[in-house]
Length: 235
Image (cartoon, rainbow, N blue to C red):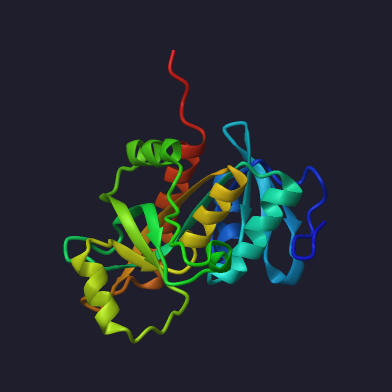
């Protein structure tokens, strides 16, 4: 057990899918995993471990924002030896050609600041996804999918319209709140990481998915994540 994860040694699989919402972790575990069991509920952050096609998988909530994700990702890596971390969450589209329900695979993540910023001092480190996971996720996607850079914000209610304009101008696909720190930690500890995101709202138009549609789209992300982590063997 750690300060924030109540699982015993061996309870956490080497492959973890990381939704922000702990209740989505429970929903996905019940729907996709065989033999799913609750292994941690410390501070209400639920974690379930089961198998998918015989492969051990843990679904662990991370909360909202980079500081919260950083706590769980650090402990999963350092104390539970997790090797593959795949964020499955929502994002806001920043480009007009991206529609609601589309999937965004984050190739790289820009940010103004993250919990790791102080380590690099004056340098602007560019955290990126694991290419193996990225390529397998792209191959597994059936819904419209976009691959490219995203922006990880440390605020939800952001009023920087000037920044939004520049992000759009420079081809940034979407905005969310966790990926830059996840990719930085994966680089630090030499682990595999990927963010698979569903467009739940559109920053430019104000359009947003209703709650029922978000659940369906979340299922698509889980399928892509599992196929990326455990691609079928070819003879």
